[in-house]
Length: 145
Image (cartoon, rainbow, N blue to C red; front, side, top):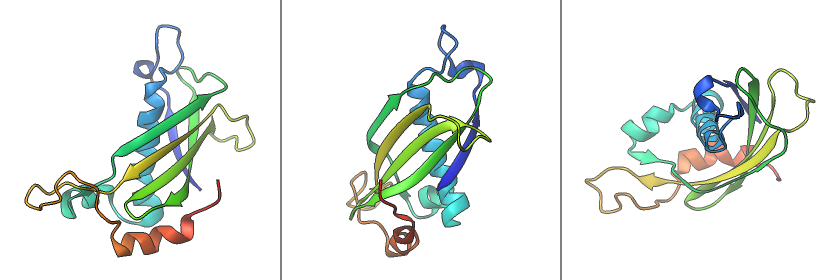
């Protein structure tokens, strides 16, 4: 499991003082980027700029249980729960940071595809097969949901 820490800022919240729901999808993406760096040991920026591949979300979902407010510190817990030919499925749980036994505030999932970002290639902006070295690094991390 990868844990991404977020301190909720004023700009993350709606007029009711709780996190505006689309912000969680941004937090999920931040967790995915830091997962590349911290777990796989591969810089996400190198994937995009160096290899010319990206991992855009093609499906995302969330179920909300306990509100998150301005000033809260949360832990976005990320797991890989599926690996396809051109996709990676991530599952998320959000809890209070530093309290691993705290109640789950929300759960979510994202499916990201491997997309060619190089306009010189005929597969530009189309799904492409997950590179073999990435597959080898990710496969041992896949867990049951």
